[in-house]
Amino acid sequence: MNPVVLAVLSVTVIAFLCAVMLVIASKVMAVPEDPLFPAVRECLPGANCGACGYAGCDGYAKALATGEEKRTNLCVPGGDGTAANIAGVLGVEAEDVVEMMAAVFCGGDCTLAPERADYQGARTCAAAKLLSGGPKACPYGCLGFGDCANVCPVGAISIVKGIAVVDPKVCIGCGLCSKTCPNHIIHMIPQVQKVFDRCSNPNMGKPVMDVCKAGCIGCTKCAKVCPEGAITMEGNLAHVDHSKCTGCGSCVENCPTKSIQFVDWKKD
Image (tube, rainbow, N blue to C red):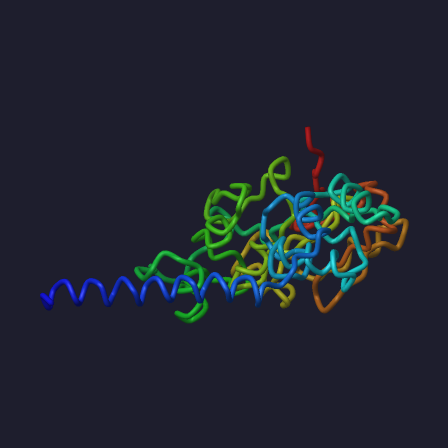
C-alpha cells in the first residue's frame, strides 16, 4: 500500500477512536448540573467583580445553588432587585443589600499637592509606587495614573487634575478600583454616608500642609463640633460613623482645610 495512503488511514482511524473515547468519557464521567445553578446565574448581572467574595458570578451562583451560601444579598452591583430575584428562585425571603460606593480618600489634586520629582517611568500607579512611593510630595495620596479607571467595568472613574474622581451616577460598587489602588486610598463606603474625611495622610499639622493644602491636619475641630458625636479621630484622621451622622454640615463648615466634605451619592 502507498505509504502516504497508509499514513492518512492510520491518522483517520486514530482520530476516530479518540473521538469515540471522548464521547464515551463525556457520558460516563459527566457531572450532572444542579438545575438551580442556571436559574440563579441568570439573576446575576455578570460583572464578575468579586464583590460577593466569590470568584465571579458563577462562583456565587454555584454556592447559592448548592446551599453552601445562604445570603442572597451579596451582589452589590445588582442591588435589591438581584437579591429579590435570587430569593424568588431559591424560595427564601429576600435580604436587603447594603449599597456601596467607591470614594477616593484624597483631595490633593495638582493645584493643592506639589510633586517632588519629574516622573518618567511607566504611566501606571503600580509602577510609580515602586519608585520611592511615586512623584508626589505626599506619599499617601492618589498617584493619578489611572490604574483604578482602567479596571472599572463601567467607566465610572476619570482622572481630573491628577487625582481619581468617581461618578456616583455610574459606579456600581463592585470594589475593583479599591483592590487595584496601590496606595489603598479608594474605599467602599455605604451610599447612606453623608460626609467623610477625604485625606489618607496619617501625619498631622505642618508635615501634612507641607505636602498638601487639602490634607487633614488632625486638629479635631470636626469631632468637637459634631452634635451627634458621629466623628472620632483614628490616629490623626477623622472617622465618620454614618449611623450617627445626620448630615448637618457642622464638620464641613468648621474644617480649616476642607478635608471633611459632603458625599453626594444621589443617582438620577
